[in-house]
Length: 372
Image (cartoon, rainbow, N blue to C red; front, side):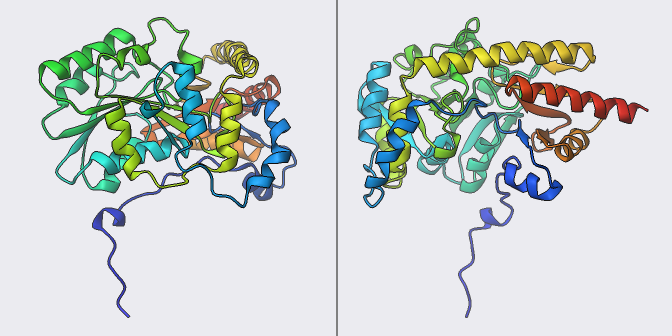
Protein backbone atom coordinates (compact mmCIF):
# COMPACT_ATOMS: atom_id res chain seq x y z
CA UNK A 1 0.00 0.00 0.00
CA UNK A 2 1.38 3.39 -0.98
CA UNK A 3 0.76 6.04 1.65
CA UNK A 4 0.13 9.72 0.86
CA UNK A 5 3.21 11.92 0.73
CA UNK A 6 3.36 14.68 3.34
CA UNK A 7 3.82 18.29 2.29
CA UNK A 8 7.48 19.07 1.59
CA UNK A 9 7.42 21.79 4.29
CA UNK A 10 6.94 19.03 6.87
CA UNK A 11 10.07 17.10 5.87
CA UNK A 12 12.54 19.54 7.41
CA UNK A 13 10.20 20.93 10.04
CA UNK A 14 11.70 20.63 13.51
CA UNK A 15 9.21 20.42 16.40
CA UNK A 16 9.44 22.86 19.28
CA UNK A 17 11.61 21.44 22.08
CA UNK A 18 10.12 22.27 25.49
CA UNK A 19 12.16 22.50 28.69
CA UNK A 20 12.96 19.29 30.55
CA UNK A 21 10.18 18.04 32.80
CA UNK A 22 10.60 17.52 36.54
CA UNK A 23 9.57 13.85 36.27
CA UNK A 24 12.10 13.14 33.52
CA UNK A 25 15.03 14.58 35.49
CA UNK A 26 13.98 12.85 38.73
CA UNK A 27 14.11 9.50 37.00
CA UNK A 28 17.30 10.16 35.04
CA UNK A 29 19.42 11.34 37.97
CA UNK A 30 17.60 9.58 40.84
CA UNK A 31 17.04 12.91 42.60
CA UNK A 32 14.34 13.58 45.17
CA UNK A 33 14.15 17.36 44.69
CA UNK A 34 14.05 19.13 41.34
CA UNK A 35 13.83 22.89 40.84
CA UNK A 36 12.57 23.98 37.43
CA UNK A 37 13.83 27.39 36.29
CA UNK A 38 13.55 26.73 32.57
CA UNK A 39 10.14 27.67 31.21
CA UNK A 40 9.32 31.10 32.70
CA UNK A 41 6.46 29.73 34.81
CA UNK A 42 5.15 31.38 37.97
CA UNK A 43 6.92 29.65 40.92
CA UNK A 44 4.00 30.53 43.21
CA UNK A 45 1.65 28.50 41.05
CA UNK A 46 -1.91 29.62 40.43
CA UNK A 47 -4.31 31.56 42.60
CA UNK A 48 -5.80 29.89 45.70
CA UNK A 49 -9.21 30.81 44.26
CA UNK A 50 -8.76 28.02 41.71
CA UNK A 51 -9.01 25.31 44.39
CA UNK A 52 -12.49 26.46 45.36
CA UNK A 53 -14.01 25.64 41.98
CA UNK A 54 -12.13 22.46 41.03
CA UNK A 55 -14.34 20.15 43.11
CA UNK A 56 -17.45 21.15 41.18
CA UNK A 57 -15.97 21.27 37.70
CA UNK A 58 -15.82 17.48 37.30
CA UNK A 59 -19.62 17.56 36.90
CA UNK A 60 -19.15 19.25 33.52
CA UNK A 61 -16.44 16.97 32.06
CA UNK A 62 -18.87 14.91 29.95
CA UNK A 63 -20.00 18.06 28.11
CA UNK A 64 -18.17 19.86 25.33
CA UNK A 65 -16.88 23.28 26.37
CA UNK A 66 -18.56 26.43 25.08
CA UNK A 67 -17.26 26.55 21.52
CA UNK A 68 -15.96 30.11 21.41
CA UNK A 69 -15.10 30.59 25.12
CA UNK A 70 -17.93 33.14 25.20
CA UNK A 71 -18.03 33.84 28.95
CA UNK A 72 -14.26 34.25 29.12
CA UNK A 73 -14.27 36.47 26.03
CA UNK A 74 -16.96 38.64 27.61
CA UNK A 75 -14.92 38.87 30.82
CA UNK A 76 -11.78 39.90 28.90
CA UNK A 77 -13.78 42.41 26.86
CA UNK A 78 -15.24 43.97 29.99
CA UNK A 79 -11.83 44.19 31.68
CA UNK A 80 -10.26 45.98 28.72
CA UNK A 81 -13.37 47.97 27.73
CA UNK A 82 -13.73 46.50 24.28
CA UNK A 83 -16.37 44.35 22.56
CA UNK A 84 -16.34 40.55 22.73
CA UNK A 85 -16.10 40.54 18.92
CA UNK A 86 -12.60 42.00 19.32
CA UNK A 87 -11.38 39.04 21.42
CA UNK A 88 -10.30 35.52 20.50
CA UNK A 89 -9.29 32.84 23.00
CA UNK A 90 -6.84 30.08 22.19
CA UNK A 91 -5.11 27.07 23.71
CA UNK A 92 -2.20 29.28 24.70
CA UNK A 93 -0.79 31.99 22.45
CA UNK A 94 1.03 29.19 20.59
CA UNK A 95 -2.27 28.24 18.99
CA UNK A 96 -3.06 31.86 18.16
CA UNK A 97 0.36 32.36 16.50
CA UNK A 98 -0.32 29.33 14.35
CA UNK A 99 -3.85 30.55 13.62
CA UNK A 100 -2.53 33.86 12.29
CA UNK A 101 -0.13 32.00 10.01
CA UNK A 102 -2.81 29.59 8.74
CA UNK A 103 -5.22 32.47 8.10
CA UNK A 104 -2.92 34.83 6.22
CA UNK A 105 0.15 33.07 4.80
CA UNK A 106 0.61 31.54 1.36
CA UNK A 107 3.83 30.15 -0.10
CA UNK A 108 4.60 33.34 -2.00
CA UNK A 109 4.23 35.49 1.15
CA UNK A 110 6.73 36.37 3.85
CA UNK A 111 6.94 37.35 7.50
CA UNK A 112 9.35 39.81 9.09
CA UNK A 113 10.76 38.84 12.45
CA UNK A 114 13.70 39.70 14.69
CA UNK A 115 16.67 37.33 14.61
CA UNK A 116 16.47 36.20 18.26
CA UNK A 117 12.71 36.49 18.73
CA UNK A 118 10.48 33.77 20.17
CA UNK A 119 11.09 30.79 17.90
CA UNK A 120 7.41 29.91 17.37
CA UNK A 121 6.99 32.78 14.86
CA UNK A 122 9.54 31.27 12.46
CA UNK A 123 8.07 27.82 13.00
CA UNK A 124 4.60 29.05 12.05
CA UNK A 125 5.95 30.49 8.78
CA UNK A 126 7.95 27.33 8.04
CA UNK A 127 4.81 25.26 8.46
CA UNK A 128 3.09 27.35 5.79
CA UNK A 129 6.11 27.14 3.48
CA UNK A 130 6.59 30.89 3.16
CA UNK A 131 9.71 33.06 3.36
CA UNK A 132 11.12 34.33 6.65
CA UNK A 133 12.86 37.70 6.65
CA UNK A 134 15.01 37.72 9.80
CA UNK A 135 16.44 41.04 10.97
CA UNK A 136 19.46 41.33 13.27
CA UNK A 137 18.94 42.68 16.76
CA UNK A 138 20.56 45.87 18.00
CA UNK A 139 21.94 45.66 21.54
CA UNK A 140 19.76 42.59 22.21
CA UNK A 141 16.68 44.61 21.19
CA UNK A 142 14.37 44.32 18.18
CA UNK A 143 15.53 46.83 15.57
CA UNK A 144 12.07 48.04 14.53
CA UNK A 145 13.48 50.57 12.06
CA UNK A 146 15.35 47.88 10.13
CA UNK A 147 12.40 45.51 10.45
CA UNK A 148 10.07 48.13 8.99
CA UNK A 149 12.38 48.71 6.03
CA UNK A 150 12.40 44.99 5.24
CA UNK A 151 8.63 44.89 4.82
CA UNK A 152 7.47 44.58 1.22
CA UNK A 153 4.25 43.98 -0.69
CA UNK A 154 4.43 40.23 0.03
CA UNK A 155 4.81 40.71 3.80
CA UNK A 156 1.66 39.49 5.54
CA UNK A 157 2.79 39.43 9.18
CA UNK A 158 5.33 41.28 11.32
CA UNK A 159 5.96 39.51 14.62
CA UNK A 160 7.17 41.48 17.65
CA UNK A 161 7.63 39.83 21.06
CA UNK A 162 7.46 42.66 23.57
CA UNK A 163 9.13 41.98 25.96
CA UNK A 164 11.10 39.46 23.97
CA UNK A 165 11.79 35.89 24.89
CA UNK A 166 14.66 35.01 25.43
CA UNK A 167 16.38 38.40 25.81
CA UNK A 168 13.89 39.98 28.27
CA UNK A 169 14.22 43.36 26.52
CA UNK A 170 11.35 45.54 25.33
CA UNK A 171 10.70 48.15 22.66
CA UNK A 172 9.36 51.52 23.78
CA UNK A 173 6.11 53.03 22.62
CA UNK A 174 7.74 55.59 20.33
CA UNK A 175 9.60 52.80 18.50
CA UNK A 176 6.41 50.83 17.89
CA UNK A 177 4.57 53.96 16.74
CA UNK A 178 7.42 54.72 14.33
CA UNK A 179 7.08 51.28 12.78
CA UNK A 180 3.30 51.50 12.46
CA UNK A 181 3.48 54.98 10.93
CA UNK A 182 6.27 53.96 8.55
CA UNK A 183 4.22 51.02 7.26
CA UNK A 184 1.24 53.33 6.78
CA UNK A 185 3.25 55.86 4.76
CA UNK A 186 4.54 53.03 2.54
CA UNK A 187 0.97 51.75 2.18
CA UNK A 188 1.95 48.37 3.61
CA UNK A 189 -0.62 46.86 5.96
CA UNK A 190 0.64 43.52 7.26
CA UNK A 191 -0.80 42.15 10.49
CA UNK A 192 1.52 43.53 13.19
CA UNK A 193 1.44 40.94 15.97
CA UNK A 194 2.64 42.31 19.31
CA UNK A 195 3.08 39.32 21.60
CA UNK A 196 2.79 40.55 25.20
CA UNK A 197 3.15 37.25 27.07
CA UNK A 198 5.07 39.10 29.81
CA UNK A 199 2.88 42.21 29.80
CA UNK A 200 2.07 42.13 33.53
CA UNK A 201 5.78 42.14 34.42
CA UNK A 202 6.71 44.87 31.93
CA UNK A 203 3.81 47.32 31.95
CA UNK A 204 5.29 49.53 34.69
CA UNK A 205 8.60 49.99 32.85
CA UNK A 206 9.30 53.38 31.36
CA UNK A 207 7.60 54.03 28.00
CA UNK A 208 6.27 50.49 27.67
CA UNK A 209 3.68 50.65 24.85
CA UNK A 210 -0.02 51.06 25.56
CA UNK A 211 -1.05 48.74 22.75
CA UNK A 212 -4.74 48.81 23.68
CA UNK A 213 -4.71 52.54 22.98
CA UNK A 214 -2.69 52.11 19.78
CA UNK A 215 -5.06 49.50 18.34
CA UNK A 216 -7.70 52.23 17.99
CA UNK A 217 -5.37 54.08 15.62
CA UNK A 218 -3.83 51.15 13.75
CA UNK A 219 -6.38 48.59 12.49
CA UNK A 220 -3.66 46.06 11.54
CA UNK A 221 -2.47 45.62 15.15
CA UNK A 222 -3.05 42.26 16.88
CA UNK A 223 -2.18 41.97 20.60
CA UNK A 224 -1.49 38.58 22.18
CA UNK A 225 -1.51 37.89 25.93
CA UNK A 226 -1.46 34.74 28.04
CA UNK A 227 -2.56 33.13 31.28
CA UNK A 228 0.60 30.97 31.31
CA UNK A 229 2.96 33.38 33.03
CA UNK A 230 1.92 35.63 35.91
CA UNK A 231 -1.49 33.94 36.26
CA UNK A 232 0.24 30.59 36.80
CA UNK A 233 -1.89 28.54 34.36
CA UNK A 234 0.79 27.27 31.96
CA UNK A 235 -0.53 23.71 32.26
CA UNK A 236 -4.07 24.71 31.26
CA UNK A 237 -3.07 26.40 27.97
CA UNK A 238 -5.07 29.61 27.71
CA UNK A 239 -4.16 32.74 25.78
CA UNK A 240 -6.11 35.50 24.07
CA UNK A 241 -5.83 37.96 21.23
CA UNK A 242 -7.26 41.46 20.86
CA UNK A 243 -7.72 43.21 17.53
CA UNK A 244 -10.30 44.76 15.21
CA UNK A 245 -13.36 42.56 14.84
CA UNK A 246 -12.60 42.04 11.13
CA UNK A 247 -9.29 40.32 11.98
CA UNK A 248 -10.77 38.38 14.89
CA UNK A 249 -13.61 37.17 12.65
CA UNK A 250 -11.14 35.80 10.10
CA UNK A 251 -9.09 34.03 12.78
CA UNK A 252 -12.27 32.62 14.27
CA UNK A 253 -13.17 30.92 11.00
CA UNK A 254 -9.92 28.95 11.14
CA UNK A 255 -10.00 28.23 14.88
CA UNK A 256 -10.97 24.68 15.76
CA UNK A 257 -14.24 24.35 17.70
CA UNK A 258 -13.95 23.57 21.42
CA UNK A 259 -10.26 24.57 21.35
CA UNK A 260 -10.17 25.58 25.03
CA UNK A 261 -11.30 23.07 27.65
CA UNK A 262 -14.07 23.51 30.20
CA UNK A 263 -11.55 23.62 33.04
CA UNK A 264 -9.31 26.16 31.29
CA UNK A 265 -12.21 28.49 30.47
CA UNK A 266 -13.64 28.44 33.98
CA UNK A 267 -10.34 28.91 35.80
CA UNK A 268 -9.07 31.64 33.47
CA UNK A 269 -12.33 33.48 34.08
CA UNK A 270 -11.79 33.26 37.85
CA UNK A 271 -8.15 34.40 37.93
CA UNK A 272 -8.40 37.27 35.45
CA UNK A 273 -9.26 39.76 38.19
CA UNK A 274 -7.26 38.23 41.04
CA UNK A 275 -5.23 41.36 41.80
CA UNK A 276 -3.87 39.93 45.04
CA UNK A 277 -2.20 36.95 43.36
CA UNK A 278 -0.87 39.07 40.50
CA UNK A 279 0.64 41.60 42.92
CA UNK A 280 2.18 38.85 45.06
CA UNK A 281 3.68 37.20 41.97
CA UNK A 282 5.03 40.48 40.63
CA UNK A 283 6.58 41.45 43.98
CA UNK A 284 8.37 38.11 44.13
CA UNK A 285 9.90 38.62 40.70
CA UNK A 286 11.00 42.20 41.45
CA UNK A 287 12.66 41.20 44.72
CA UNK A 288 14.27 37.99 43.51
CA UNK A 289 15.47 39.52 40.25
CA UNK A 290 17.50 42.03 42.26
CA UNK A 291 18.86 39.17 44.38
CA UNK A 292 20.05 37.36 41.23
CA UNK A 293 21.48 40.53 39.70
CA UNK A 294 23.46 41.21 42.87
CA UNK A 295 24.92 37.71 43.00
CA UNK A 296 25.73 37.60 39.28
CA UNK A 297 27.49 40.96 39.66
CA UNK A 298 29.60 39.51 42.47
CA UNK A 299 30.58 36.65 40.21
CA UNK A 300 31.34 39.13 37.40
CA UNK A 301 28.88 37.31 35.14
CA UNK A 302 27.25 39.33 32.38
CA UNK A 303 23.48 39.28 31.91
CA UNK A 304 20.82 41.29 30.12
CA UNK A 305 18.60 43.39 32.44
CA UNK A 306 15.11 41.97 32.03
CA UNK A 307 11.57 43.34 32.03
CA UNK A 308 10.25 39.80 32.51
CA UNK A 309 10.38 36.90 34.98
CA UNK A 310 13.58 35.45 33.50
CA UNK A 311 17.17 36.50 32.86
CA UNK A 312 19.40 35.73 29.87
CA UNK A 313 22.85 35.06 31.33
CA UNK A 314 26.14 35.10 29.43
CA UNK A 315 28.20 32.18 30.75
CA UNK A 316 31.25 32.78 28.53
CA UNK A 317 33.78 31.27 28.18
CA UNK A 318 31.64 28.22 28.95
CA UNK A 319 29.03 26.84 26.61
CA UNK A 320 25.45 27.24 27.77
CA UNK A 321 24.87 23.53 27.13
CA UNK A 322 27.69 22.64 29.54
CA UNK A 323 26.26 24.80 32.35
CA UNK A 324 22.79 23.42 31.59
CA UNK A 325 23.95 19.79 31.91
CA UNK A 326 25.93 20.46 35.08
CA UNK A 327 22.97 22.17 36.74
CA UNK A 328 20.66 19.42 35.53
CA UNK A 329 22.70 16.77 37.34
CA UNK A 330 22.23 18.79 40.54
CA UNK A 331 18.48 19.03 40.14
CA UNK A 332 18.26 22.57 38.69
CA UNK A 333 16.56 22.85 35.29
CA UNK A 334 17.45 25.96 33.27
CA UNK A 335 17.44 26.46 29.49
CA UNK A 336 20.39 26.36 27.12
CA UNK A 337 19.97 28.84 24.28
CA UNK A 338 21.53 27.11 21.27
CA UNK A 339 18.22 27.10 19.35
CA UNK A 340 18.20 30.91 19.61
CA UNK A 341 21.82 31.21 18.41
CA UNK A 342 23.04 32.13 21.88
CA UNK A 343 25.42 29.17 22.47
CA UNK A 344 27.21 30.91 25.36
CA UNK A 345 24.02 31.80 27.26
CA UNK A 346 21.48 30.21 29.55
CA UNK A 347 17.99 31.48 30.36
CA UNK A 348 16.99 31.28 34.01
CA UNK A 349 13.45 31.73 35.26
CA UNK A 350 13.21 33.73 38.48
CA UNK A 351 12.06 31.28 41.12
CA UNK A 352 11.36 31.38 44.81
CA UNK A 353 14.14 32.57 47.11
CA UNK A 354 15.03 28.95 47.95
CA UNK A 355 15.27 28.05 44.26
CA UNK A 356 17.36 31.11 43.46
CA UNK A 357 19.73 30.42 46.36
CA UNK A 358 20.31 26.90 45.10
CA UNK A 359 20.82 28.09 41.53
CA UNK A 360 23.49 30.58 42.63
CA UNK A 361 25.12 28.02 44.92
CA UNK A 362 25.45 25.37 42.19
CA UNK A 363 26.24 27.83 39.43
CA UNK A 364 29.14 29.23 41.50
CA UNK A 365 30.31 25.68 42.24
CA UNK A 366 30.29 24.75 38.52
CA UNK A 367 32.21 27.78 37.23
CA UNK A 368 34.80 27.58 40.02
CA UNK A 369 35.29 23.86 39.45
CA UNK A 370 35.90 24.31 35.75
CA UNK A 371 38.15 27.28 36.50
CA UNK A 372 40.41 24.95 38.48
